Length: 163
Ligand code: RBF
Image 1 (cartoon, rainbow, N blue to C red):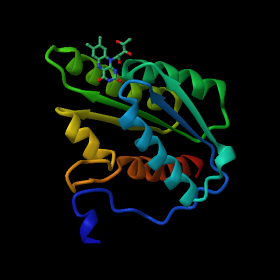
Image 2: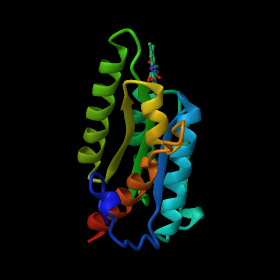
Image 3: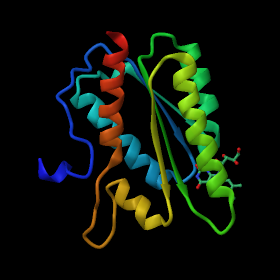
């Protein structure tokens, strides 16, 4: 259990029969891709079949709330949405504005629609921080793929919503 001390303590979850939406950005795709892969593999491990996972992409993080909202509305049988993106701080204020709007927007979508939306958005100060959080860190520090936690959160919240 020690390795989970600072992170999510996973539960054994049965996602059989759940339908999950993944919306991911094309910005920072080399980091987003392994995060999506980690998410999908964990959904499979939890029993969610490949045919029940819908994957869609959008340009950047700012588009995630709107796309998540529309896709959830268009697909009423989806039990949870995982919105995935990577924001890396640049030299202007863009990072702060996009990060804030994206996080607030995703929370609003979940509460407005009454369906779980998982915040799969990394907000990193450096590229290296993002690599580590996607499990592809350099120089022997592969890190931890946060997609694993996002998938587990989505299954847990979807099951909670179904009760
Ligand atoms: N989108 C991301 O997903 N990650 C980023 O790190 C990111 N950085 C951006 C930096 C600047 C200066 C701009 C203009 C856009 C950035 N975007 C980023 C794209 C943004 O989320 C959105 O797709 C565009 O602003 C179009 O609405």
